[in-house]
Image (cartoon, rainbow over all chains, first blue to last red; front, side):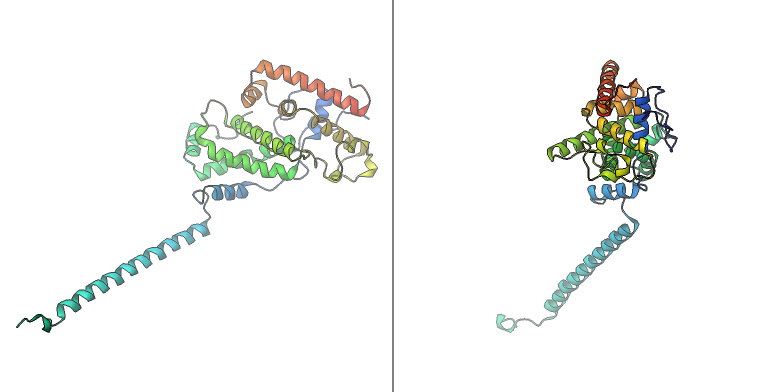
Length: 109
Length: 202
C-alpha cells in the first residue's frame, strides 16, 4: 500500500502548498483536501448572527426595517393624537370655566 | 498569501472600520471558503466547522477596530480562526468529545482508535478506493493524535501552504521557533503513521 496520492491538488485550485517530495506530506494534503460536504455561502447566516448580536443595528433585513419604520410612525401618530386630545380637554375645561355664571353664594351683586 | 482583489487597500479597510455592510459582505465572500476549509481541517467536523466559521466572521466584524493593519487582513482572520478553534478544542476537552469524529462520515459511529482496523469492504465510501480510504483514515487519525500546537503547524504549512513568515505572524511566534516546532511536528507525525501502519516510511 503506497502513501503517494494520485492527485495532490485541490479541486478549487487554491494556493499551492510548499513543494515537497515527501509522500507523507502529499498524503496529508490529499486527506485534508476537501471537506466531506461544502456548505452554501455562509453569508446569510453570518449576517443573521451579527444582526442578533448587535440587537438589530447591523444587517437589518428590509422587511424588518420597514416594520420598524411603520412601528415608529404609528407611535408618533399615537403620541400626536394623545397630545391633541389632551390639548382639547384642557382648552374645553378653560372654556367651560370662563363661560360659567358667577357663583350666587359668593354674595356678588 | 495574497489578498483577493482590492481587499487589502486602505479605502476598503476604512469602509470595514466604518462597519460598511457591503464591504463586509465582500470580505466574507472572499474568505469564507478558505476559512471554512481551514477550520474543518483543524476541527475535523463539518458541522462544527460551519458553525465556527460563522463565529470567526462575527468576531471579525466585532473586532474590526482592533485591526491595526500591520499584517495582511487574511493573516488577521486566520489568527482569529486559530484562537476560536483553540477555544472550541478546550470546550470539547472539558466535555470529553473527540474533535475529529466525522472526518470520515461513513465511519462516524467508530472511534479513530477502531478505524484503522477496518478494511475498505467494511465501510462504504464510493468516492475513494480501498487503499486511499484506509490511508486517509490513518493519516487523519494520526494528525489528530498530535498536540494541538503541532497539528496547527502541520496544517498551516503543509496543507494550507503558508510561508514561515505568515505562520509566524498568525501564531505570534518567531520564525525560528516555528521552523523547529514544525520539524518536531513532522517527525512526531511520521512516527505515529509508522506505528499505525507497522512499517517504516522512507
